[in-house]
Amino acid sequence: MAEAKLDVVGCGSMVVDLFYRTPKFVHAEQKVALHAHHDDGPMERAAVGGLVLNHLGWACVLGLEVGVFGKIGADRHGEFLRRGIEQLGIRHHLTHDGSASSFAKIFVDTRGGRAIYMARGATAELAPEEIRRRHAGFIRHARMVSTEISQLPLRTVIALLLFARANSIPTVLDVDLPPADACPALGTRAELERALRLATILKPTRAAARALVGAGRDTLKLAQAMRSRYQSQAVILTDGARGCAIAAAGTALKLPAFAVKVVDTTGAGDAFMGAMLAGLRWGLPWRAIGTLANAAGAVCVGRLGAFPAGFELRDEVLELFRGAMPDQTLPAIETPARVNGPLDPSVEVNRFLELCLSELGTLRREIDLGQIRAAVDMIRNAEARGGRVHLTGVGKPEHVARYAASLLCSVGTQATFLHATETLHGSLGQVDPKDVVIAISNSGNTRELCEATLAIKEHGAQLIAVTGNPASELSHLADLVINAPVEQEGGVLGLAPRISVLAEVCVLAALSVALEAARGLTLEQYGRWHRAGTLGAAARRLVSGRHGRRKLKAVK
Image (cartoon, rainbow, N blue to C red):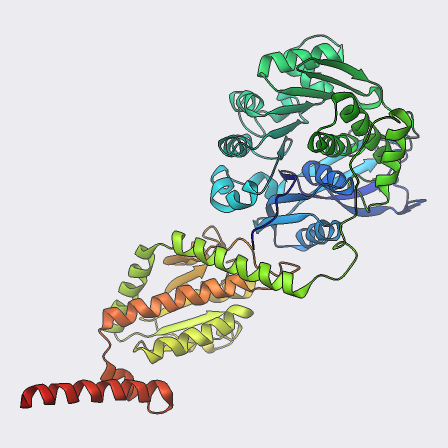
């Protein structure tokens, strides 16, 4: 079953926003007491946020099929983000190997002004090569790609824009930071200029545009100067409470913002961009696109937070838009049934099985057979010294370790299961310095396993890591790393270890094949070790049949 096309997929900031109400902003060496409670609730409120995730949320609320891809951490903030993404019905293609998920502390004063302190975390760790290696298939399902100059490394932005261009997918680049803030934090000025030239459409803030082209204060002239300099299809410039300006082929517009009561300005530009993406997808004229975008920005500032909590906000946006442009026709918009209703099990199972095949296909392409050969040599050399093999893991990998130990024994490699947490309570005596220990962990950062493997290394045994994270603590401890890369676990929540377990089993089964071949295992040996069951009987029949054919040949 082919995946349906997505109207837009985005890559960039995915952030847990932590909001605080403050009576005023303070300078260095000053103090202020935060409001303990407010009409909106307690002093601190957590919300899904991030420039890209916010604008995808607003595009979703307005009826687009959207998706997000990138990197988050396997932590509580990452779980919070995933829940918010899935509750709104946003498709995702996320890796969970970031050091920590991004978060921001946002202080909002009584007039709706804000101060934001950001921790970029995993967003800053998405590498350029991951765009093609890990997310290519997901991106190709998009009709449009959005990204940002905000938190992503500029080299990663460039890689994404180049990939989209190579696949004839139009791109929209949200230019949220002026050069002085973007460089060198995100990359070089040359990289910034290249990214701006690669995007199909630019959406800069007024401050960013002035810093880039220095064309005075007039927003329309700034937009036109940006379009001329970077040869963009269009430039849509936002100017806060003053509205927006649009420069495109045959179009030069200034559109005022809607007059509304401001509660919190956080995310107004993101809501603007989400509605702008909807207008672009629907093929609206530029005036209608700008008006719809201004309407979404106005609805956003009337509430605390940037990410839309539900589809009821759509009606507020459309009411403002239709009041300003009563003659403009919009497409019929329906709320996706999957958001509030139960999911179809057969659809989810089919999606999971297709994902299994895709992920295992990636494993087949990326597995390093040289690592397998090196593992065989390490184990065979240990056996020559009188050593054995032990397998260990924590959680689901513990079960994989038990299976793999049994499998290796069945084909001639002496192997035992080693309980990871018991290793620090005496079971380390099971391991001889001549031995090899195979430690299994998808993340490679499981605390109990890392503590056990550190003790194993200090004890003198050699360590092989089977992991999906070559940059992990376990990988750094290991003498040899066998990479078992998995991007997605599958399933509705995408959290339970499923496909990573399959990958670990496949890698260890492949190692057993390699050891069987290196050993020159015979049917006679296999039959002697399997005294009962159909496998042993089958081996003995094959041996008997082979001997019978030899005798018959000798008689002849």
